[in-house]
Image (cartoon, rainbow, N blue to C red; front, side):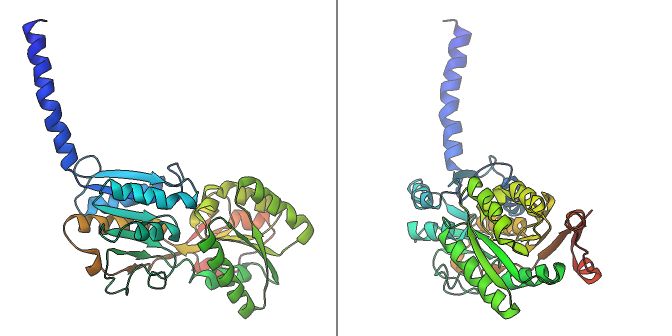
Length: 327
């Protein structure tokens, strides 16, 4: 071996452990999510990383993020959470569905957890109170369940004379499905509406649910707020138009994909807040002292083109209240 090659090789041998040690010294965040890493979650990952950046942390520069995806299999969440605990991450960002936060909380009482949940975190047992969470968890509540009555009311404004509404839920996400059914049925009773519950865990079952509309002929469709449905939003929007069923969704993504109307919280903003809190915890703050943030920004988005296609006239008052109208 030539002397120059030997020295270069020796330099690399000395440098590599130093680099590895430097990387190991970086704090590690465990990002636990109930869905999958694909185009449907890209905007939320970016929002999370922006929240970290707001507090001075950049992935790959001064922080490492370990991603764990349940691929819409809720039963995988406990094992994925346990894996992050074994790796001794500095903080766990629990996102996607309520089950994610519950799995993280069950896996550790020591590692800080920052969650984003649609339900009351006090009622779920995640925190002692919103102002003083106590324990090792805090995060953001984006009010998916509390907005159910509002969504149903907006649907009734857009579809005059509606009396029978089909509710699409995903049974495999038991907590979300149960709360969807409970909240929609409660709101429907106060409005004098009839609810027909339809179940779908797969794309094929979504198609089967729409085929049942040929026989049942509901006046409208209320799509439950399950992350799996978001991954199938193009299918849902297409089938709704094909069967001439006015449908309401929880997120603007559905309307941008060809859905009729959505009303819900700014989810990207929620993920950004998770990133901010994760960064603040890395800087030394304790989750017990960080109050749970509640969403204050809600969006009504209407696809006027789809409304016309369905033969609907959007009331001027409803158009005036919309945050965005897609033509």
